[in-house]
Length: 481
Image (cartoon, rainbow, N blue to C red; front, side, top):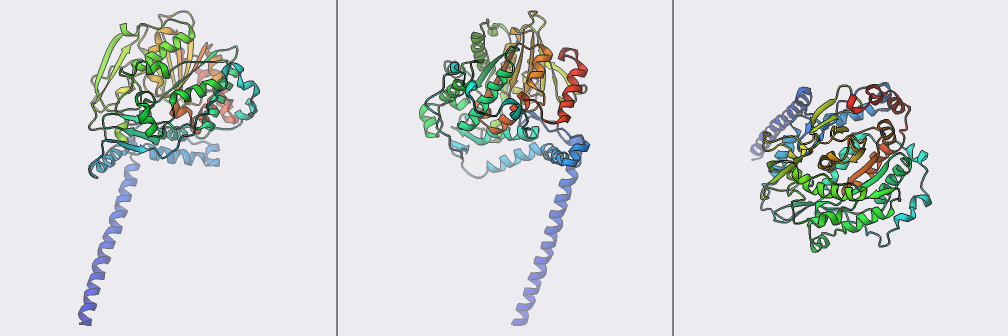
């Protein structure tokens, strides 16, 4: 009996050992295959349709980046950000999750944060709180180098998934108030206005998320959400009287029965952007363009970025309505503002995406999408008017509605550019600087760091040299590039 048991035990051990070996070799082969796929540079995407952004570019080695290790960090970020089939694998993972079982009609993704209370007493902007600020002076703040730009940009994008609520027919992005982050943002805008005093007028356009406008007060209270109207009032209340603040929350709330936000995407529609543009025109004292007279394009069956965060299969698909400004439909942008000579692209203010596949990012029809640098020249306006829009992705349809109000519009996406605000204003004689940000981005430290890199002088000698010899000075103004 003992002999038979011993033989059986030996057979079992040989069987386990054999399959353990198969498992090790199989896992090793899987890792080797993954490495080989990762080496297929020609399969690496340059743009993410899912995330609506340009992916990290292959870094160029320099002596300084090798010595301080930055090159290897950038190389690692490029490798992971542009891995072949990355988006397909994300979609497969989401499909697998959908098989877990019956999904509730109402769901919450993230939402693990707790919003701080918004102070009841809001300072009077007319008192100009900046004059009494005890913060570091501009030179000291400018000596703090921002983090690596694309890594910080990716961290900002993660704010989208920080809290997403779905009621079974639409999804909504939640907002969590942070007093410190909000105060930091206000300080940046106030400093920008102080630096640009006598050179350009500064405007602030702070936007609520779709949850703040579209959900009822009862739903917001149940989700532990602060009043986004009160949050915007807090931001605006602390801004210097050098900053012209544009009402947004009440403007959008007055039209909440209209198609202001997508159901499957956290972005707003061009119609919502136009209403805020009207509000801007009222503050600036100009007549808005006749938006409803413009040619209209409609792109059906749009499924936006929420598809990667929650189950949107039961939602009514969105459509993107885009009107083409009368003055011009031409835009030029640069995909890499370190290499402007080779990265210039001419496109459309509103691009016709009617022939694109159903899963295409229809929201990218506006001004070429998220780019480090963008320029629009309207030949129908000859009064020398110009503006610089410092924006996130909500600024794309907003800028498309502004085209007929300016001779020249310059844009920088604060998440992807290394340019300096004052240099741009002085180089191109810009008259208006417009900061457009959503609350979910404005109230983050990553956004603060990236905006600081734009507003304050660069720290390193290397970046100073780039400003002196960089593409702007080599190529001249945008329209001559």
